[in-house]
Amino acid sequence: MTDRPVLVVNSGSSSMKYQLVDPDAGVAVASGVVERIGEPGAAGRARHSFAGNDTTFSGPIPDHAAALEVMRQLFVDSGRPLRGERLVGIGHRVVHGGDVFADPVLIDDAVLRQIRAVSGLAPLHNPANLTGIEQAARAFPGIPQVAVFDTAFFRTLPAAAATYAIDADLAARHAVRRYGFHGTSHQYVSGQVATVLGRPLADLDQIVLHLGNGASASAVRGGVAVETSMGMTPLEGLVMGTRSGDLDPGVLLHLAGPGGLDPAGLDTLLNRRSGLLGLAGTNDFRDLQAMMDGPDADRAAAARLAFDVFCHRVRKYIGAYLAVLGRVDVITFTAGVGENAPAVRAQVLAGLEGLGIVVDADRNAVRSRDARIISPPDTPVTVMVVPTNEELAIARATVTVVG
Ligand code: ADP
Image 1: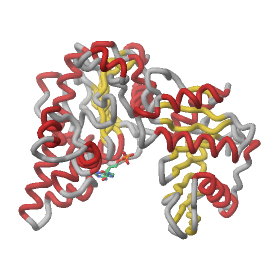
Image 2 (image 1 turned 120 degrees about the horizontal axis):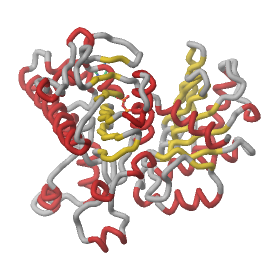
Image 3 (image 1 turned 90 degrees about the vertical axis):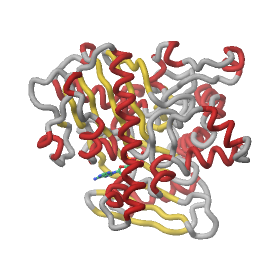
């Protein structure tokens, strides 16, 4: 076991996920989640995994400071206490870096001010990320804190890809542009592709499909992001578990007019009640696939339609990114659905032989946690499944920043 681990923290408004990562071996030493932070009474709970055993907590967790104390105690209870002096650093996932942050940074007061300044762009996420950082700095004084931004990998988007065609002054005043999200995953996966294939990253034109509960696609030329499907917010692009993805903006006008929805109602509809959930009543892909084969014909038809809409949207983006790149060497599936749903991979890429894109049925059916090629040998485009690991990417970025 490493002597110099990194603690990775992903702090949400009511939950905090963490992993103690050995960045050299590329493994999580321990991990856990603290949930229902700030809920009244003793509703809080936490689960911690170390060496194949789970340790749990339930009781009051009034705030993020308490959540960190719970985490620290769970490390003690599990038999492997977390000793601050041995941490290389603490790496924090921060959702929005605005147009300020193109790389991970060591957190100081100026950085905290800048993260706060762009928080209006991610009001649900950045304030919670900031609270996590501030409390971790208090709980582990003297340990370097590093911020790794979901948007950073997409700071390289060309202006033509990052710009919305609306009044330019208004857009500038309100920082309305395309930022992209899931960048840590797209960067990690596109880098892994080069490593696994044993080819220089600089030589590869790639399309990466991150299909999880949130979903996004990117076009990556030589390791540099040139397009991505999420925009100013994570709402744009692919169909997701509970988010609509692309929509005619006129739909919003219609729903706000005759539909009578106010901004909060639209937010709830598009972020929480749309996507697979809106179409078929579940945002869990496993449940969706079970429903497709289930006894209830109406539910099966709704699930089938949701599945088809999901796959069609991904396919449409692949076509778009082929044109953006002009050519493609590798198409890669990642995240919960991308890694585990062969039926999605098969349907998304069916009938594209004319473009040099083929999925080998046997290779596609293999269940594995390893990165793998699912196209036949000697086809022009390599199709891969590569497990994402955002925590490892954040841990390695933390080591690089701390030096
Ligand atoms: P996020 O990190 O965005 O919460 P994940 O990347 O963990 O999401 O992906 C979650 C999604 O992956 C869920 O819809 C889940 O049902 C789906 N998923 C996980 N395992 C499988 C599987 N074996 N087959 C199909 N879908 C799966």
